[in-house]
Length: 307
Image (tube, rainbow, N blue to C red; front, side, top):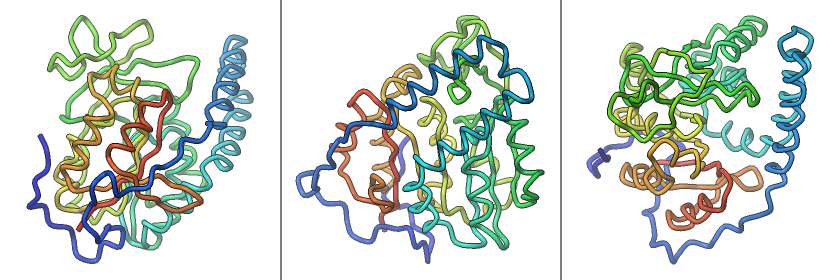
């Protein structure tokens, strides 16, 4: 399934890229900087794993300390992303946060869309979702709809493989020899800590809410990004939101997908990939995006609709 060139952008979408996409050779390559963030993440995850083995993370104090440290870490390392994305979200808009985790982005989205806007925050894992609900309640975010589910290409139920040593690495998996989607996908098999969860589609959620104007979809789902997108084709064709997405080649391949497949899908829907550099979007070609995604670590890409 791909989008067609007949898709018509919604009038007044300030995030649209007005010029036609040039050939790959016309793009300046985006340098692949050493990932200080990746090194820090590995260090922090090693510490987290060690603390988990002590049982401290199962206590209220331990969880509270972790959440405070996570908020601080994200606030520093995602500052460029936050500033760039805030310019794409006008008051009154709808934002969809797929893989909301404990609500770092959700609560900021909720502030940006006021007054009159809404955030749909989708998170399947029960501990993370409980933290997300507490954030929503504590901050009085009445404009946030929390949905405990995975987002995929079809609604129903799927299986979630929980990672006890990585709070943001829970992912769709197969069970009993059958892929979670029931379509024979090359999804990693469930191993141990695997639970059945509700599955929704972005298009289904938007249809239930009367197709509100969506300005941004954020997706961070550990390799299931293509599945999320295939459940959002109506939104991509008709509403033309910006899409901010983590693209991880290894995680995608574990799901039977690839960075190339995700990029091809977005380009077919007339979206242009960008990196966020110095708090603003910088266009990169599909070829350059594919090269960055094959560098051995994940890449955060912002897709803006072409007019």
